[in-house]
Image (tube, rainbow, N blue to C red):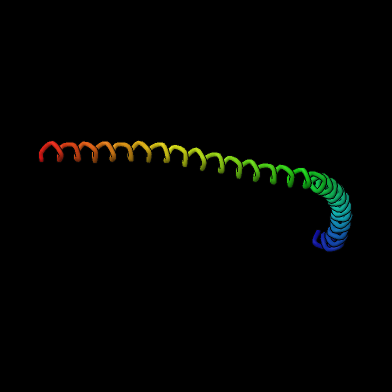
Length: 108
């Protein structure tokens, strides 16, 4: 029995190794084909992104302009509101100073 194992076992191992090598070669070929397909898809997506790049640049510049306009409008509104409150405060101060002058004149 040991003799038969010594004769057949190496042959069996060699046959299994040949099958394994053939299976690995087939798997490698399939992986290479899949990688080529993935590369084609990536190139296609890259081309499409490049074609949309100009559109993104236009949108970016438009949003920059809109934000600048919005900031300008907001600043002008804030300045207008500040001016209105300053006028009211000035008027109150003038009224108080006029009252003080009248009271001083009446007291004299």
